Each structure stands twice: as structure tokens, then as C-alpha cells.
Image (cartoon, rainbow, N blue to C red; front, side, top):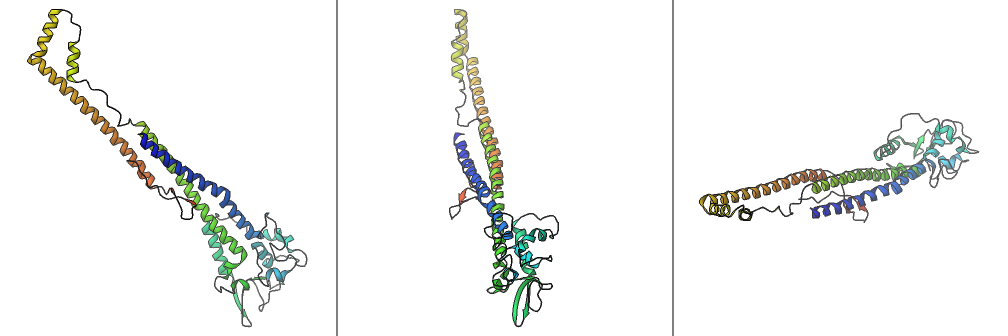
Length: 328
């Protein structure tokens, strides 16, 4: 029993170590990286607050052309919204001042759950809505509305141009847009988070299962314990001989009885009874052992169904794999 409990304790220690590692990494790194990527997709790289900043949210808060049209515009989601949203914006002053008004134009609807798949779907949907038009032999890639290839910010020409990002990838150039790249990072980190949630859940279940197995083993007597001493027929006969005699005559009579045929039969009966008791004791131990094994088999089967990991990945980072030990 002690050897089995020791094995369980070692495995429980390994599972708990991986449990804490997965949980701590998710709490201290992955979640903050997700929030950072999403915040920078909205407001720009290096922005620590939910507030638009010049040169980060837009290329220039007072220059529509550099922020929406010319080489490498489109820094953020909110920056692009300022380029195409139908509200009066004085780009000659500070376009970021009306961001709150622009945000208010967004439809009020229940937000979908933040998952890696939903972010990927949003990226693909955006890529499908980028327009591709030709003017004077030149192909333009934009969001919004152009007029004869012109995008000046006046009525009928509100757009944001993505030509630079499609220069090396005519089909999926949108993936090179800075804020799309940030969303791609967020999706990757969300997958790490989702995997960590599963790992923590599986490790928790494994720890409970290991605890149940330990209690099962602890509750069954150790089969290696020495069996209770069985009194032999000879010892019983000797015990009877050693009883104090009430009289010399009774003692002699008792001795004669023990050596006659009847006494011999009694010895045989005692021997058979002792053997039967010993056999019953062994049968009881065997039954207890079978019951223990049956319980362990059930619990081992439950462990096999858990996707709990106990080894490390090739890169040295803790990673969960299926438990490969089972008690017998």
C-alpha cells in the first residue's frame, strides 16, 4: 500500500506543478498579451490607455492625406474609422477629438464571445470587404468610397487606401495592415489561453481522481500484512491438557479419552476446522484485493479519458500530455 501511495503522491505533485504553471502563465502573461494586442489594434502601438493619440492612432491628427491615403496609412481600427465615418471632422485641427462621437455611431448589439475563431472570422470578413478598383491602369485597394481613383476626404471621397499593403500580396494584403496584424497576434494568444483553460480543467480533474485513488488504497487493508495467527489442533490439544485438573481421577480419565479413537477424531476435526478458517481468511483477503483492483481499474479508466499532460515540450516549456501510469 505504501508503495502505491508513494507513486500517487509523485504523480499528484507532477500534475499540480503543471497545473500551477499553466494557470500562472495564463494569468500573468497570456491574458495581458491578449489585452495589449487588442488595445493596440484599436488605439495604436504603445498606447497604454483607451484614448486616441496623435502619430499612434492616426499618422497625423491634422492631415487626412497622410492618415488615410498616402504611403502606409491605416495604423489602427479607430484611425480607419475616422477616415471613412460620416460625421463632420475638421482634419485641419484635431481629428481625434471626435473619436467618441464616431464610436457612438457603432451599432449597439450583443458582442460575440471573444474567441480565437471569432477574431479570425472578423479578419476574414474585413479582408472580403476591401474593395479593389482600377483607375488609369492602376489598381487600388481601399475601404470606403473613391471617385475616379481619388480619395480626398470630401463628400463622395471618404476612404482609406491600403495599396502599400497589397504591393507584395495582391490577394491577402490586408494581413499586413498593422491593426490586422495585432488582431492576428490576439487570436494566437487567445488560442494559448483557451488551451490553458482546458489544461487547468483537466489537471484539476486529474488531481481529484488521484485523491480518490489514494483514499481507495488507504481504506483497504494491506494484503502484505501478516495474517492472524491460526491456532493449530496440536495447540488446542495442548491447551486442553494444560487445564488444571479438578482431581487425579478426572485427569487420568481425560488422558485416556484423548488417546482413544474418539480423541483422535476430535483432533482431525480441529485440524479441518483450522484449515477451513485459514482458507476463509485467504478468500477474504483475495476478495478485498479484487475489490481494490476493480476500484482502481475504474479510476484508471477515468484518468485515461483526461487530457492531462505530464511531460515537457521540445522547447523546454511545460506542456501537458496524457498520463501514462496506472496502478495495478
